[in-house]
Length: 99
Image (cartoon, rainbow, N blue to C red; front, side, top):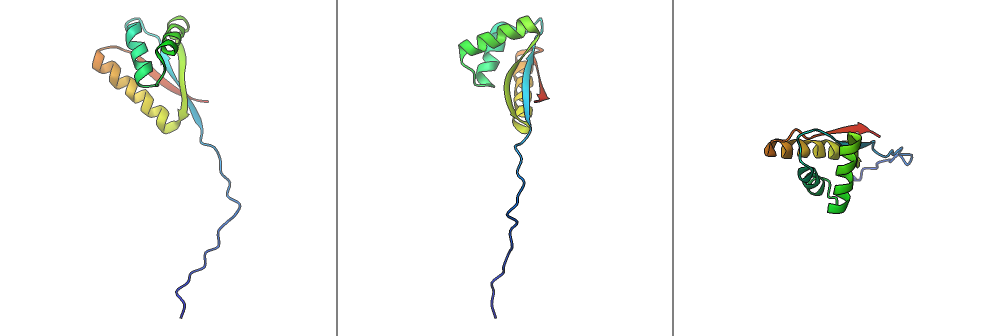
């Protein structure tokens, strides 16, 4: 009597890269430039110089890409921005769009 179980594995697995999502910060007339830079440093792990450039692009163009992530990470980043903005009393908003 043998306790061995034979399992046949399918060698032809079709793996696909997960969809990516761009996270944008949107311009508003109330969030301070310093707060936006702080969010970019804390949430998106940008350098202060890079954050200042992104913040100016948001101010001039209405929105700017802050990063590209998988769905779950992008949704988390959007939530973190919303939480930080509410805590500080700013209407800063982040949105995500499929790449």
